[in-house]
Structures are given as C-alpha cells and as structure tokens.
Image (cartoon, rainbow, N blue to C red; front, side, top):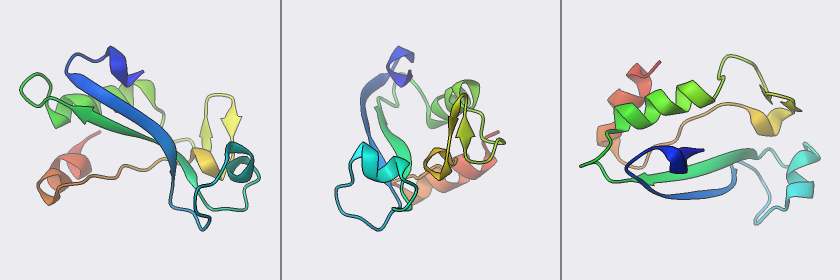
Length: 96
C-alpha cells in the first residue's frame, strides 16, 4: 500500500522483534516466535515528509485494535513503529 504514496521509493516486508533467526511465515503465524509482521518504508523526503508517511500509515492501519488488522488476528499483527534516525523520534511520537 505504501507504494501508492508519491515519494515512497522502496518497501520491504518481513518480520521483527522475535526470537528466531530468519523465520518463515509458518513460524510466525504459529505465535511461538514473538515476531510481528513489518514493512520497511524508504522515501524521498524532498517529495514526501515523514509526517505525511505517518499520516498515511494511520489512514491504512488501525493501531488501536490489539493484535489484529482487519480479518488477520494474532500477536504477529500488533502495532509498532520503528525509526532509524533519532531525529525522527519526535515526529513518530507526535503522529496520530
């Protein structure tokens, strides 16, 4: 979905936060690895701001439903945002 946002140059999906190196989908959906499904979003900040990316995230994602996204249920669907630069921390915590 993030590819639809002008300025997003790359997305990469995978899993984060678990206790198994290189988990498979089957491993993660078992609920035993502690991983969450994730997407890494790379964007051109001269076209779209971090704030706009976060606004889009909240448009397409429901973070207030615990361990669920749409019909998908399980701890691997919990909501979290990771950032790679300390300068992004304020924007991430202020986003709604």
